Amino acid sequence: MNEESRIALLIDAENISAQYADYIMDEVSNYGTCSYKRIYGSWDRIVKTKWEGEINKNSLKPMMQFNNTRGKNASDSALIIDAMDILYTGYVDGFCIVSSDSDFTALARRLMEAGMMVIGMGESDKATEALENAYDKFVYIDVLATQAEEEKAEEKKAQAQAAKASNTRQKQSQTQTQSRNNAGSIPSKKTLENRITQIIKENDDKSKLTDLGQIGNELNRIFKNFDVRYYGRKGGRKYKYLKDFVKDIKSLQLDETEGNRVYVSLKK
Figure 1 (cartoon, one colour):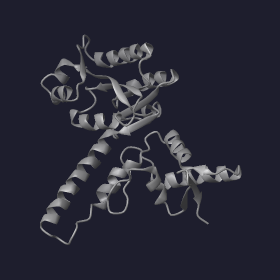
Figure 2: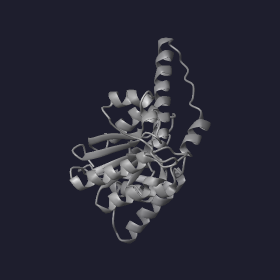
Figure 3: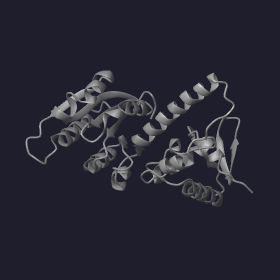
Figure 4: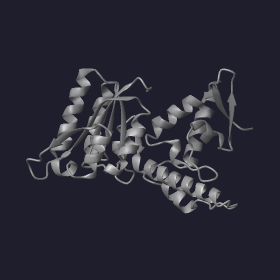
Protein backbone atom coordinates (compact mmCIF):
# COMPACT_ATOMS: atom_id res chain seq x y z
CA MET A 1 0.00 0.00 0.00
CA ASN A 2 1.05 3.62 -0.54
CA GLU A 3 0.22 7.01 0.89
CA GLU A 4 -2.86 7.29 -1.33
CA SER A 5 -4.41 4.09 0.03
CA ARG A 6 -7.42 4.59 2.28
CA ILE A 7 -7.35 2.72 5.57
CA ALA A 8 -10.05 2.07 8.15
CA LEU A 9 -8.40 2.12 11.58
CA LEU A 10 -10.45 0.25 14.20
CA ILE A 11 -9.10 0.12 17.77
CA ASP A 12 -10.29 -2.17 20.55
CA ALA A 13 -9.82 0.06 23.62
CA GLU A 14 -10.73 -2.79 25.95
CA ASN A 15 -7.77 -4.83 24.73
CA ILE A 16 -5.05 -2.27 23.91
CA SER A 17 -3.47 0.22 26.32
CA ALA A 18 -3.61 3.96 25.57
CA GLN A 19 0.18 4.12 26.06
CA TYR A 20 0.55 2.75 22.51
CA ALA A 21 -1.68 5.40 20.85
CA ASP A 22 1.11 7.45 19.24
CA TYR A 23 2.90 4.32 18.01
CA ILE A 24 -0.34 3.00 16.50
CA MET A 25 -0.90 6.24 14.59
CA ASP A 26 2.70 6.36 13.38
CA GLU A 27 2.63 2.74 12.22
CA VAL A 28 -0.69 2.91 10.36
CA SER A 29 0.58 5.97 8.44
CA ASN A 30 3.08 3.63 6.76
CA TYR A 31 0.21 1.92 4.95
CA GLY A 32 -1.90 4.87 3.85
CA THR A 33 -4.30 7.59 4.97
CA CYS A 34 -6.96 6.87 7.59
CA SER A 35 -10.41 7.44 6.13
CA TYR A 36 -11.93 6.07 9.35
CA LYS A 37 -10.42 6.39 12.82
CA ARG A 38 -12.67 4.67 15.32
CA ILE A 39 -12.14 3.35 18.83
CA TYR A 40 -14.45 0.91 20.60
CA GLY A 41 -15.02 0.32 24.29
CA SER A 42 -17.48 0.54 27.14
CA TRP A 43 -18.06 3.93 28.80
CA ASP A 44 -15.84 3.13 31.79
CA ARG A 45 -12.95 2.03 29.53
CA ILE A 46 -12.84 5.35 27.65
CA VAL A 47 -14.28 8.24 29.68
CA LYS A 48 -11.96 9.56 32.42
CA THR A 49 -9.19 7.21 31.30
CA LYS A 50 -5.95 7.78 29.37
CA TRP A 51 -7.80 6.91 26.18
CA GLU A 52 -9.98 10.01 26.54
CA GLY A 53 -6.97 12.29 26.09
CA GLU A 54 -5.62 10.23 23.18
CA ILE A 55 -9.00 10.39 21.43
CA ASN A 56 -8.87 14.19 21.35
CA LYS A 57 -5.18 14.29 20.47
CA ASN A 58 -5.43 11.88 17.52
CA SER A 59 -8.96 12.82 16.40
CA LEU A 60 -10.38 9.35 17.01
CA LYS A 61 -14.12 8.77 16.89
CA PRO A 62 -15.29 7.00 20.08
CA MET A 63 -17.85 4.26 19.52
CA MET A 64 -18.86 3.70 23.14
CA GLN A 65 -20.99 0.70 24.04
CA PHE A 66 -22.96 -0.61 26.98
CA ASN A 67 -22.58 -4.27 27.88
CA ASN A 68 -26.21 -5.25 28.36
CA THR A 69 -25.37 -8.83 29.30
CA ARG A 70 -22.74 -9.82 31.84
CA GLY A 71 -19.86 -11.68 30.22
CA LYS A 72 -20.70 -10.39 26.73
CA ASN A 73 -18.50 -7.78 25.06
CA ALA A 74 -20.70 -5.40 23.06
CA SER A 75 -17.65 -3.50 21.80
CA ASP A 76 -16.31 -6.50 19.87
CA SER A 77 -19.66 -6.95 18.14
CA ALA A 78 -19.89 -3.25 17.30
CA LEU A 79 -16.38 -3.26 15.79
CA ILE A 80 -17.20 -6.29 13.63
CA ILE A 81 -20.49 -4.82 12.41
CA ASP A 82 -18.86 -1.49 11.58
CA ALA A 83 -16.04 -3.23 9.72
CA MET A 84 -18.54 -5.00 7.47
CA ASP A 85 -20.52 -1.79 6.93
CA ILE A 86 -17.33 0.04 5.94
CA LEU A 87 -16.35 -2.84 3.64
CA TYR A 88 -19.60 -2.59 1.70
CA THR A 89 -19.30 1.17 1.23
CA GLY A 90 -16.31 0.49 -1.03
CA TYR A 91 -14.57 3.63 0.24
CA VAL A 92 -11.46 1.97 1.66
CA ASP A 93 -8.57 -0.11 0.33
CA GLY A 94 -7.67 -1.80 3.60
CA PHE A 95 -8.22 -2.20 7.32
CA CYS A 96 -6.04 -1.93 10.40
CA ILE A 97 -7.51 -3.73 13.41
CA VAL A 98 -5.76 -2.97 16.69
CA SER A 99 -6.40 -5.78 19.17
CA SER A 100 -4.81 -8.96 20.45
CA ASP A 101 -8.25 -10.52 20.86
CA SER A 102 -8.52 -13.79 18.91
CA ASP A 103 -12.26 -13.11 18.44
CA PHE A 104 -11.29 -10.96 15.44
CA THR A 105 -9.62 -13.85 13.61
CA ALA A 106 -12.73 -14.62 11.53
CA LEU A 107 -13.24 -10.93 10.73
CA ALA A 108 -9.70 -10.57 9.41
CA ARG A 109 -10.14 -13.61 7.18
CA ARG A 110 -13.47 -12.32 5.86
CA LEU A 111 -11.99 -8.93 4.97
CA MET A 112 -9.10 -10.61 3.15
CA GLU A 113 -11.57 -12.76 1.21
CA ALA A 114 -13.13 -9.50 0.02
CA GLY A 115 -9.77 -8.42 -1.41
CA MET A 116 -8.85 -6.03 1.38
CA MET A 117 -5.31 -5.51 2.70
CA VAL A 118 -5.66 -6.27 6.42
CA ILE A 119 -3.07 -5.19 8.99
CA GLY A 120 -3.21 -6.33 12.60
CA MET A 121 -1.58 -4.72 15.63
CA GLY A 122 -1.35 -6.26 19.09
CA GLU A 123 0.90 -7.23 21.93
CA SER A 124 3.50 -9.97 21.47
CA ASP A 125 2.56 -11.91 24.60
CA LYS A 126 -1.20 -11.88 23.93
CA ALA A 127 -1.72 -12.52 20.22
CA THR A 128 -2.19 -16.14 19.15
CA GLU A 129 -0.56 -17.69 16.10
CA ALA A 130 -3.99 -18.20 14.52
CA LEU A 131 -4.80 -14.50 14.91
CA GLU A 132 -1.46 -13.40 13.43
CA ASN A 133 -1.81 -15.70 10.42
CA ALA A 134 -5.28 -14.31 9.66
CA TYR A 135 -3.72 -10.97 8.66
CA ASP A 136 -1.55 -9.91 5.72
CA LYS A 137 0.81 -8.51 8.36
CA PHE A 138 0.72 -8.45 12.15
CA VAL A 139 2.73 -5.84 14.05
CA TYR A 140 3.85 -6.24 17.67
CA ILE A 141 3.08 -2.71 18.84
CA ASP A 142 4.59 -3.28 22.29
CA VAL A 143 7.93 -4.32 20.78
CA LEU A 144 8.06 -1.23 18.56
CA ALA A 145 7.12 1.00 21.51
CA THR A 146 9.82 -0.50 23.71
CA GLN A 147 12.45 -0.05 21.02
CA ALA A 148 11.38 3.54 20.36
CA GLU A 149 11.63 4.41 24.05
CA GLU A 150 15.05 2.80 24.29
CA GLU A 151 16.26 4.74 21.26
CA LYS A 152 15.03 7.99 22.83
CA ALA A 153 16.83 7.11 26.04
CA GLU A 154 19.99 6.36 24.08
CA GLU A 155 19.81 9.70 22.26
CA LYS A 156 19.42 11.62 25.53
CA LYS A 157 22.29 9.66 26.99
CA ALA A 158 24.51 10.43 24.00
CA GLN A 159 23.68 14.14 24.22
CA ALA A 160 24.55 14.20 27.91
CA GLN A 161 27.85 12.43 27.24
CA ALA A 162 28.73 14.88 24.43
CA ALA A 163 28.03 17.84 26.70
CA LYS A 164 30.47 16.48 29.26
CA ALA A 165 33.06 15.78 26.53
CA SER A 166 33.08 12.14 27.56
CA ASN A 167 35.19 9.78 25.47
CA THR A 168 33.40 6.67 26.58
CA ARG A 169 30.11 5.11 25.56
CA GLN A 170 28.15 2.51 27.46
CA LYS A 171 27.10 -0.53 25.52
CA GLN A 172 23.47 -1.50 25.32
CA SER A 173 22.57 -4.61 27.29
CA GLN A 174 22.83 -7.65 25.01
CA THR A 175 20.60 -9.59 27.35
CA GLN A 176 17.75 -7.08 26.91
CA THR A 177 18.23 -7.08 23.14
CA GLN A 178 18.04 -10.87 22.98
CA SER A 179 14.96 -10.84 25.18
CA ARG A 180 13.18 -8.39 22.86
CA ASN A 181 14.12 -10.36 19.76
CA ASN A 182 12.56 -13.44 21.31
CA ALA A 183 9.27 -11.68 22.13
CA GLY A 184 6.23 -13.62 20.98
CA SER A 185 7.08 -15.90 18.06
CA ILE A 186 9.46 -13.66 16.12
CA PRO A 187 11.57 -15.85 13.80
CA SER A 188 15.27 -16.00 14.60
CA LYS A 189 17.88 -14.54 12.26
CA LYS A 190 19.10 -18.05 11.50
CA THR A 191 15.59 -19.15 10.53
CA LEU A 192 15.31 -16.18 8.17
CA GLU A 193 18.76 -16.86 6.69
CA ASN A 194 17.80 -20.48 6.01
CA ARG A 195 14.56 -19.43 4.31
CA ILE A 196 16.32 -16.81 2.16
CA THR A 197 18.92 -19.40 1.16
CA GLN A 198 16.14 -21.79 0.15
CA ILE A 199 14.48 -19.09 -2.00
CA ILE A 200 17.76 -18.37 -3.80
CA LYS A 201 18.45 -22.08 -4.47
CA GLU A 202 14.93 -22.59 -5.84
CA ASN A 203 15.45 -19.67 -8.23
CA ASP A 204 18.91 -20.93 -9.21
CA ASP A 205 17.35 -24.27 -10.18
CA LYS A 206 15.08 -22.33 -12.55
CA SER A 207 17.96 -20.14 -13.81
CA LYS A 208 16.28 -17.09 -12.27
CA LEU A 209 17.80 -14.19 -10.38
CA THR A 210 16.50 -13.50 -6.86
CA ASP A 211 15.17 -9.98 -6.40
CA LEU A 212 15.29 -8.36 -2.96
CA GLY A 213 11.61 -7.52 -3.32
CA GLN A 214 10.77 -11.20 -3.81
CA ILE A 215 12.62 -12.05 -0.60
CA GLY A 216 10.65 -9.40 1.30
CA ASN A 217 7.34 -10.68 -0.07
CA GLU A 218 8.19 -14.31 0.74
CA LEU A 219 9.31 -13.55 4.29
CA ASN A 220 6.15 -11.54 4.96
CA ARG A 221 4.02 -14.32 3.47
CA ILE A 222 5.60 -17.07 5.57
CA PHE A 223 6.23 -15.10 8.78
CA LYS A 224 3.25 -12.78 9.25
CA ASN A 225 4.97 -11.08 12.21
CA PHE A 226 8.30 -10.50 10.43
CA ASP A 227 9.66 -6.96 10.63
CA VAL A 228 13.33 -5.97 10.29
CA ARG A 229 12.78 -3.33 12.97
CA TYR A 230 12.65 -6.09 15.60
CA TYR A 231 16.28 -7.09 15.03
CA GLY A 232 19.44 -5.52 16.41
CA ARG A 233 22.59 -4.74 14.44
CA LYS A 234 26.11 -3.99 15.57
CA GLY A 235 26.20 -1.09 18.02
CA GLY A 236 22.76 -1.89 19.43
CA ARG A 237 20.73 0.02 16.80
CA LYS A 238 17.81 -1.55 14.97
CA TYR A 239 17.47 -2.21 11.26
CA LYS A 240 15.19 0.07 9.27
CA TYR A 241 15.45 -1.50 5.82
CA LEU A 242 15.42 -5.06 4.51
CA LYS A 243 18.41 -4.27 2.29
CA ASP A 244 20.65 -3.56 5.30
CA PHE A 245 19.33 -6.62 7.14
CA VAL A 246 20.14 -8.98 4.25
CA LYS A 247 23.47 -7.27 3.58
CA ASP A 248 24.65 -8.15 7.11
CA ILE A 249 24.06 -11.87 6.56
CA LYS A 250 27.57 -13.18 5.83
CA SER A 251 26.44 -16.01 3.55
CA LEU A 252 24.63 -13.64 1.16
CA GLN A 253 25.76 -11.18 -1.48
CA LEU A 254 23.88 -8.13 -2.79
CA ASP A 255 24.28 -6.75 -6.32
CA GLU A 256 22.63 -3.49 -7.38
CA THR A 257 21.97 -2.67 -11.05
CA GLU A 258 21.95 0.74 -12.71
CA GLY A 259 18.17 0.67 -12.50
CA ASN A 260 18.36 0.39 -8.71
CA ARG A 261 17.25 -3.24 -8.79
CA VAL A 262 18.85 -5.25 -6.00
CA TYR A 263 19.56 -8.95 -6.44
CA VAL A 264 20.61 -11.42 -3.77
CA SER A 265 22.83 -14.47 -4.27
CA LEU A 266 24.86 -16.93 -2.24
CA LYS A 267 28.49 -16.10 -1.67
CA LYS A 268 30.84 -18.57 -3.33
